[in-house]
Image (cartoon, rainbow, N blue to C red; front, side, top):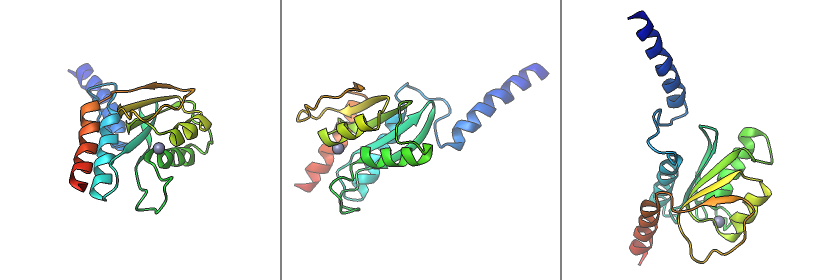
Length: 162
Ligand SMILES: [Zn+2]
């Protein structure tokens, strides 16, 4: 009984630390940060911005989350990825992020790819494909993560705009 109780407390302890970061303590999929990126995309949608969300993780910890804010910041460079990069650099007090991974709901554009290269990001996971993107990237990237959901929020946005 006592041994069981001790074990349970340990598990809860881990869960609590995950909850403290606002994360799911029992991630269902290795790509769980994409669900957070999708939440950011929904937030962008609510603000009338093109719904793209981005999250940067270090290990199991989200250190930055952002959404597209080109209108809100009156800045054509305020892409979700760029805002997340700047946040992560601030959190780590580092201009390079080699141990961090980016999750973004839409395949990064050429501008963001260049920024991600400069930031020496570890790996990039993206949701929806953007067929107009053809810029070479020196980092590893994996597309099609939660692709349907990432794509449908964009379709919804542009459909409502018409
Ligand atoms: Zn971009």
